[in-house]
Length: 277
Image (tube, rainbow, N blue to C red; front, side, top):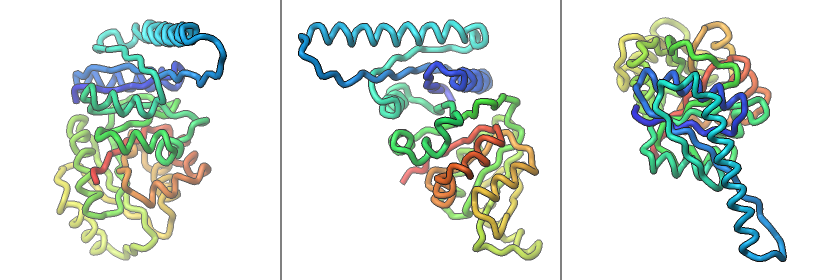
């Protein structure tokens, strides 16, 4: 993992996301691309084009000054991490996707806030474009998340072949951190009665995934998000991982109250794997 993209809007939440990204960069010996995208207003005016151009230049200069000020504020805590500042004009989601390609980004680390909620990232138009147009992993960092290693990663799975193959990207992360990897299946259509049923689930996972420190859990008679929330409440984890193609989970996250339970009360990062269609 050579390049980590960290978009910022200069908020406290984005400060926290940058600190988290820096911890990952230290471990992977990565470079951080600290990016800010500013939008220009649509102007209806009778003034000359030259005057309007000066306004745009002032806007760009102001955005660049804010980006440099943000970096200088954070520099004492990330001075040991190589960092490149990138300023872009336009819709943030579009620019994030473009920079991810241009800079060969391996991971995008973004902040989440209670006001912007995870469902706006996962199913909102801006975030959908990011996930659709980028092939790299995305990690969403809640405001109170503090990096303490990734000792335990919970991966939500529907046990489909494509989902389990996609989990190999999470396995690669787990190897670096020597994490315990929990495969969590929440489905009210699957009934697990005894150890034989659990063995069958484990066998299915092992058909596609090889990793020594992994376990499987099955929750039944619960909707996906409630099952995940319940599991995380009773089992300490450092990261929740999922793939974008996991339709049931995304559908469940469309409910703001469920999103709050899963993404904010847990205070753990959400790792989103892009599934190539």
